[in-house]
Image 1: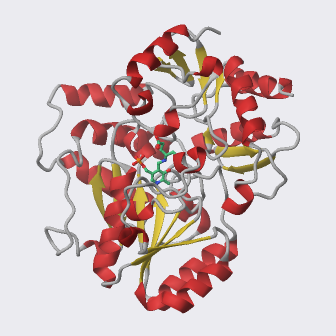
Image 2 (image 1 turned 180 degrees about the vertical axis):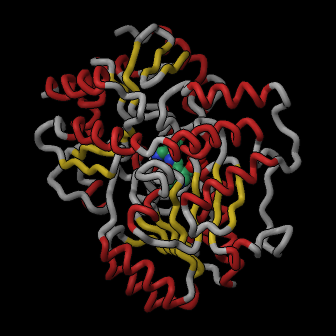
Image 3 (image 1 turned 90 degrees about the horizontal axis):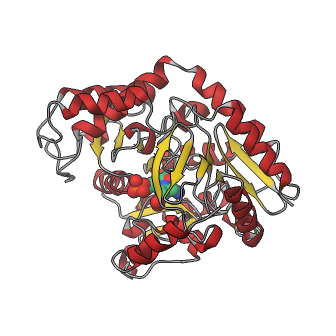
Length: 418
Ligand code: KE4
């Protein structure tokens, strides 16, 4: 495989964009030391600037559960182009999308649309603080909730990949409002609430982690979160930006039978266009301006193109529940071919092959994975035409466009890895 054009593009990009990328996780050193610059996506495949073809298991980091250029999504976007792109005013489709989110996740009695997962979690946190009149937040080491100042404490995703323990630029005063605990530790959570319970505004959690690699929660951990937030009057926020409409149509909260006080969504609800949402109990959400005194706003929130794209996506997923069985089965087939010496975590169609002894249940166990071995696997797969997330601390995603041929080619490439 040649990557000369991508190398030249990276050189040019670096002159004007930090690291040549608009999000750090994209700056991985693939074969030839450069990330492929992509020119086109179709179904489950990506095509780069050197004409290379890859089976894509990133899917834009989760949104493309139905693959690139899914026809109903493309048609929905084209339809909007005939009437405009943005009005800065309410539209009917925004109501429809909010209603679909509530119907999928009934804990969200009310919903506000925003433009990114970061905006969704930042807003949910502000609302939780305003609603409770408290300042402290509990998050979990290795979880990533977007680049919100106060949540970039012991965060996962690109921070874990780049080994940035705590980012510069976040005032100590902000970081001090966040308590970072080990994931899957009911004991640590209990102790934190005993010590600070009446000051804790919210617990924000990835109900299935994707951002330190895929890690499922234990039932005890989930139950402790529900019990303690109820007991101390804190807001339980399920960050379902990645898991919403991914691990099941109703997200992790449906899978686990839990009704969090608030939830955030993103990725899948936009079908690949920039959109996210936060929502929760009406009693909480009615504190948001213009009804209440907690301010949150956005020029392009509820953007007609993104909303139409998301509606087409969710309508298809709702009317084709068999998609989830299909993608879960495909992900299982791939995980069954994982290289020896890996601990595999999979929840539905998201998975990670950790190069370490299992079980991987928290950051403490994930961080011990052999990242050099992971890099070798990633390079081997890329050379085999398979595009995995370029970090041990990310989840891979299987979508409905991954056909038998793609799965077989992926399994065959995994089997050849030594
Ligand atoms: P965005 O602001 O990137 O749209 O969403 C932030 C976010 C919030 N919550 C969860 C659970 C998330 O996974 C994310 C973003 N996920 C990463 C992938 N690990 C986005 C990829 C990137 O940063 O480029």
